[in-house]
Length: 111
Length: 119
Image (cartoon, rainbow over all chains, first blue to last red):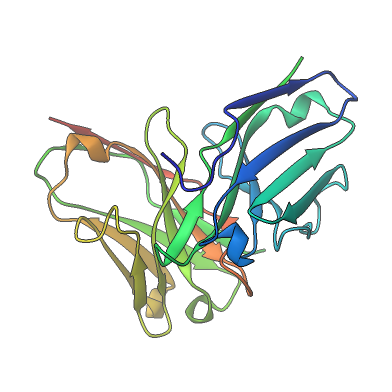
């Protein structure tokens, strides 16, 4: 059971917009610790997509955006492309555990 | 370009020891935390712990505390993850990753080391 809860799967057609939620608690997201997002393809190193809730590293398309409110955060992907099919993870810090925590991951399928 | 290069895949028997490595380049290795993240078969990413190579300060997840040791040799820009006695349940992919400048996110990742432990 992950400290941060994500839906196991989401799907969308090419060109559509999808969102992936990440629900935490008052010891992590709700305590205003930053939320970060990664894209992970099997067998390949995870890639940082969003850091500090809303910031994109250089090279990440602006189709990817992050937001946070209360004890939850979301990753939005617009203009869905086949290459976006991957697993997506949220990550934050938890003060009760005194450490980094990941969500359980969400598998994005592009129909 | 910042790079983290991990040691190759390992096949071990339960009870054996193992140390895998992660060599950083093209950045100041001593000034950035290095974390270890595992992915067990069919499961998600799980943070194990991290080390600050400058002074070897370490943090561990409660789930692995006492089960592994994280160390670093700053003279050769290399971090390590060590098991003294492997279990079959340690089978999985292990990634090292460099912590970003501000809050604890990981901006660069190693390619992963697959560890297979037979019982």
